[in-house]
Length: 301
Image 1 (spheres, helix red, strand yellow):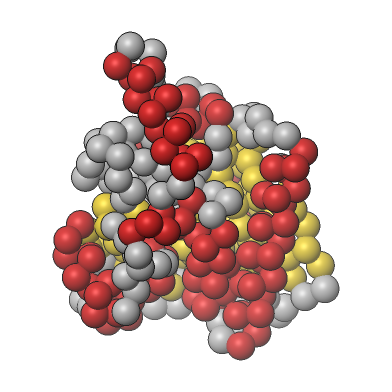
Image 2 (tube, helix red, strand yellow):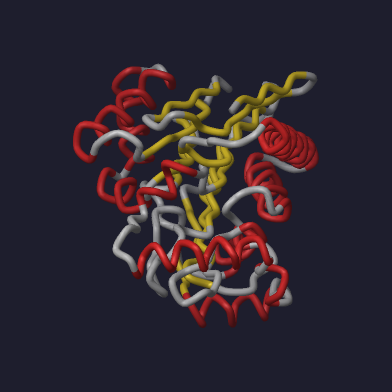
């Protein structure tokens, strides 16, 4: 089997100009290339971590260096990974100044007996793993200006977090199957603009923001974290796949449930099954996504 890597850069309206659109598509394609290279050198877990870490570093998405500000003007990161071979997961939540939240999540997976570590505990672990970075890397004049505008709207009672999904993308994620049929999934995010400090979204929660299981499929979700958590979107997609045996239909059914229960403009999800078939589904206007295998890369927005 040739390795397959699928990525997303968030579901939303994506009302962007052509320059920005091409920037996003290039970042997706480069992330896929990084993932495929890592898959050839290692396996599925290496692939998803490499792809997501590239998107975190790019600053193009709401993850890693591109993450948005909480209501206190600070940046808090969430991320999670799952190894489909061992059915183990690792995640971090509400952690600051981490060079790669997804790499720290992998550190949790491989070096602790825990699943999710948050806040100062996660920061302490990042110190041990050598993953802390300078705080200024996460703050820009452009984001600070946007934060001040949104904060003013909030003070006037004109703000709601769903606006973020309608206007922008959010979470990044990747799923992969390697040459041995092993599956893996990873998701990373900066959350939503003006979130309350300590708020945790779906990205670090297995079954919600991600899931991977050998012999079945791997999934990574995007959208409004609260909706994804309450619908357990990734695990729901997994269950639908077991019923239907078709990855596209499984994702469509999972998104249809979330839409019926919580409304449109809420979620998106990518997946790859154990045979290497990629798929995606969303109920927003658009979703940045792509997939690739050796000699072939496809991206769209």
